[in-house]
Figure (cartoon, helix red, strand yellow):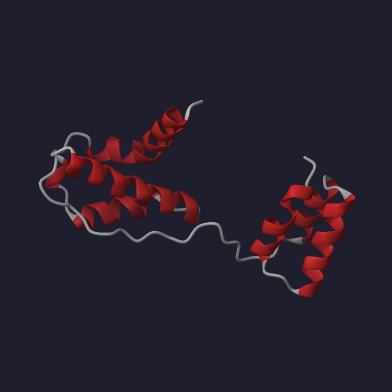
Length: 134
């Protein structure tokens, strides 16, 4: 798949709920509150990464609309975007066992060392994912 097709698929997916809700309305008629409410409903129960990408997609849609003279001015300002890529919990013993059952000896060694030294959860993946033989 080319980069253009991947980008198109990304935005199509991210904007589907928005289109389903607001496709019958003129973009300029939406209010910032409606945009915030949409993001809250669309992102309920989803990961920070998904919610972040939904906000980015709406910001890019607005930018595209302004550049192509579909909008005269912005409908909303900068949207709140959750931080992505951070793990804030240590895997449970069951999750650890499942992970280590499929891991190489090298991965098990460094993973165990990182757990014992108190490394932050996101450190495990940044430093050791290359050792996972799945």
